[in-house]
Length: 579
Image (cartoon, rainbow, N blue to C red; front, side, top):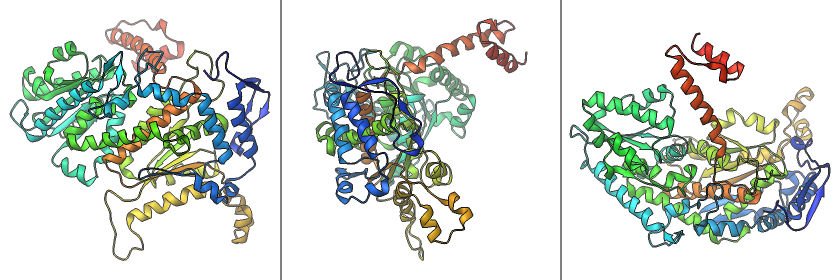
């Protein structure tokens, strides 16, 4: 560990103010002992703290060095509050943290998820058929492709009308039941492809609904307008014990039986992504329609597995989803082989560490200028916040710097009319802009000066500059703005951001984009020496919810002892039960 006992040269920062922007002026590092690579980075922030982005952006050589490409994916990070020297220190920090060594271990199947004793191999899910990735001496790639081939065979049959429902009708509608990592990534990809011309043509006459929330309202909305005769249900639960998912599954099972008149319908209308074959069989699911995945796949990284591939292939066809895998695979190669100064995930991960740990910004706005990415940010929230929302290092000691950020965002230009006000004139929130050179749905009206997509992208290019440069009081006065309004119309600027530009929002580039963010997340965790691949923080609430559930079951029958709960909780429970 870079932070742990026995690490090399250390330096002590005592009550040193390291504010690098107005929003961070109150922050100090108090009596903290940090290794030299960290103090070197903090020193760069101190050096740059009074240098506005207006000044940094005047250096064309600096700007050019921050224009980096992976194939047709372009990253421009010239509006981040760094220069070449600061980036050198960040790369040195990554070297000291052995990021490249940890990356190598991940690709090789070493059990880097130490708290759970597991490898981290979402990259194996998109590996080519002839690849070799060993776990405990066994190549896992053939097993991955065995499941992929089985899903292709099943989904091709369903889409061709060869696998029909209980009454003989084709299954044209899918209800995918899962929560968290069994839902967010899958819905993101589904929505992102919905208006892609190739995907839309493949999905003609088909529908997918997602059922995640245990709220019965979600059940009503998921089933609204569907006919049981044409509906295939996909249940995603590795152990077939996830409380919310299984209650929803049982609810939909009752709907199917009620509508179709016999429990025998389940074998024709339900498939599963699970490893609990005894439980899926007890549920009534044909064992041939159960598709497995592995404990070396974390939920938030699992949409590349049966978790996502099954429902997405039913909607768009297996071959198109393999283009999504191809994009992810190419980003894997880039991440594994590109030098740090040209490595997009490495750069983005280090910049996130810079903004979170060094500049002490607690938020990050992900801003896709593409309506198709309407569910992308929700997925990134889980991907990054569940991965890096940690407070201890791998050896269990406290992390001495801030980790993780609060992720939020909306597709542009909707966000501009919502929270950009705060970003421009309130808190400093680093932003990540995502845009595409071509639209999934090009529209150009006669008489309009630009196409609809150019109108959208005008904002994509303008907003980062507005955040970086701002507008001074002197500029406003020169424009004749009344004195009483000058302060209100002043924009401080110096708001950091980066921009990603991709050719078009299709399956291949979506794969590249998602894999980029997955690797970016891992880089941060490796620098912080935390485990980005466990999620113990989700467990405590589940345990307490079980206690409440047991109490409610008794209370609804006239019993129930609320004395075990906090006083306010017991009082609110009584109100809920109208006691």
